[in-house]
Length: 99
Image (cartoon, rainbow, N blue to C red; front, side, top):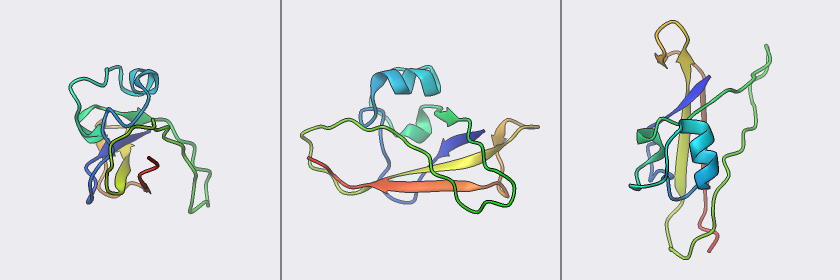
């Protein structure tokens, strides 16, 4: 399992993703708007042994707000503690404004 952790750049927010996806991924709604790392978003991702890359999709919604590139960063969760592990895998990506 991977959970969203703070990114080093402006971060995708709860208003940047579909409300249904947010509900399914974190059990929360988009209001109040907050960074995804503060919303408890987690994903199950299968990373086959020996692979060094994996693709995941985070759906986004089109809005009319001009924004800089935004990022999302997932950290592998240590299943013994339930917390992001410092030595775990990291998945990251960014989105450019599509408006």
